[in-house]
Image 1 (cartoon, rainbow, N blue to C red):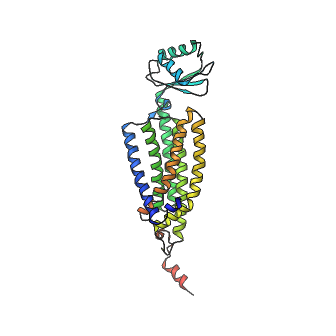
Image 2: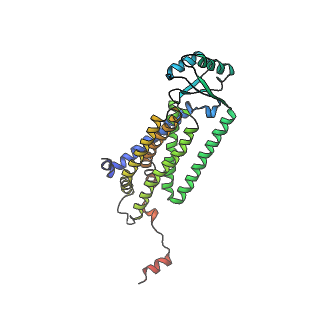
Image 3: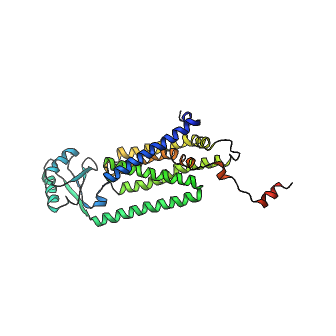
Length: 311
């Protein structure tokens, strides 16, 4: 079915429509990031992190409502299991009085009978260092990717892969900004994983485009047709790889609980948009930049040509 839509001008038109859609989504993501920003978690903002258990199973909503009556600031309660909970407090809410009030309430209530396992404070300076180190790691990964692409591909294919990679990261960040999903260290780690996955998809398509261009020295087929053929020949492999990876990430999303939910959402989104961008950007942008079979013709100097022409 998909191979049918990738034939001839129809396939080229779909690729360019997908590229236009990607440009619109990138603009919307940038707008969301500039207007709403990211909802940074405790890893970056600092505050109190308290873990406690209850003597019996308690509904998360009921426990959250009970704590809210004894807590004057903002907090986030997540369930680590049926009777294991984690409470995060923002720096503005992380006062000693607040902590003692809600902790006393849950430990002294007979229906809850909680026991505090640990309570730690992360300062804002530590959060700033974590954010700086994480961004530095992502920047270093991007530089390494660019160097690798510059060596492996002709510059047009390399530019297409880099733009596709930036596109994927911006869309994931835009989704987190739009939905105000907590952005923590696990999400930052998922961005590094997305860089590797998106690069892998782009390289698969780019390698196939390069191979087909090299055998088209007589320029019988147009670059658009060659790119469509390259995508069709790698499409089944791409969909199977993406599908199995998405199934694994979906299992983490549904079964691993709240601590890894942000990680799974980011990775799931990154795989979807990465597969999309490897077709609509990594393979289409080089065509707009003038990629053709001539870029892979072997240039022969006059002396070598004379030797080749000799009987």
